[in-house]
Image 1 (cartoon, rainbow, N blue to C red):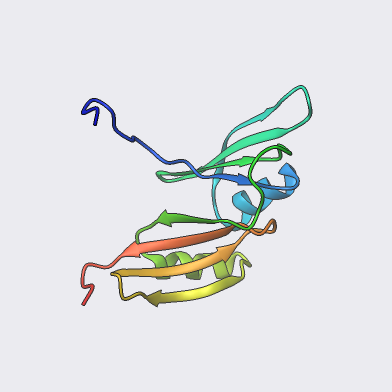
Image 2 (cartoon, helix red, strand yellow):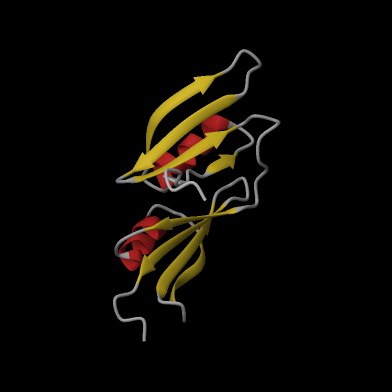
Length: 126
């Protein structure tokens, strides 16, 4: 094992069918800000949305990942976030629930089938 090597950061890349609808959902419904947007010569679009310390990468590239995956986003105050999202009209797929592995989780899904798992580590996992 090379002791100098190490993994630094995982960044979710989510496929979306069309960028304007995706940016509207992530900005207007989930409260993210658009950090960057790009279009390549072939017309594929790429964007980064961020909220606090969380960043998600979105792509319309036909060679990229397809919708339907799940992304875990660690959060603080998952119940307050779920309330905020409901007030913004976001359907909650799984209401906040305590899990036996020590987290409290809430699931939402974007219009392209990507599940966003909002996960808060519990301080009292027992």
